[in-house]
Image (cartoon, rainbow, N blue to C red; front, side):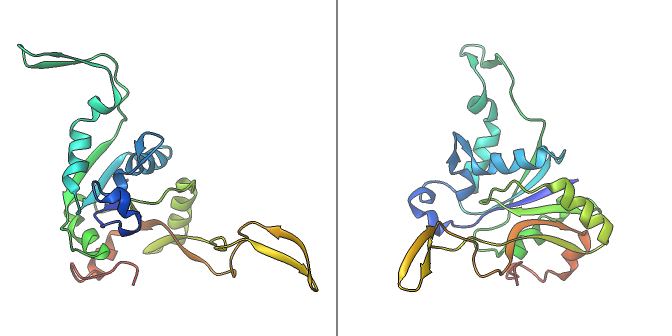
Length: 208
């Protein structure tokens, strides 16, 4: 099974970081967000990735092209034009990087990578969100329901802490309680290849 990851947006909400790199390449604990997402999938034996590139996509290509330089000790033989890797900690991943355009919408990006997908269900997510979602459980649900698309849903916390009142007196504080009970898109999908036929083109927004 393959996982498609959107990694082409501008990342305007992290502008101080994304002026120099795409949001999926912002580091957490010394590793890009994109790497962490792939680790989440590989924990459930999903190791074949198709990444939709856009804004500064060449930086993502450079990262994977030089993966050993980021993760291993190496020696260079300058005269012999060779490199020796002293220990390999590379992941057992296959990563296909596809330029899907800078202005293409989310649905359009998915449509553009269709030629790299097999005729089977696949995972789909955003390149800027991390979760401890149990993808094995999501996949099992998707198969049992025999549906075209499965999406994870979450209840977001409130934006502010809440005061507990007793008349005019404050009894305590609750830090960012669950919001109004509504559910929002959790960002992790399992899709049938048939959904590709429902995407019109580059201007299609997946979330709509």
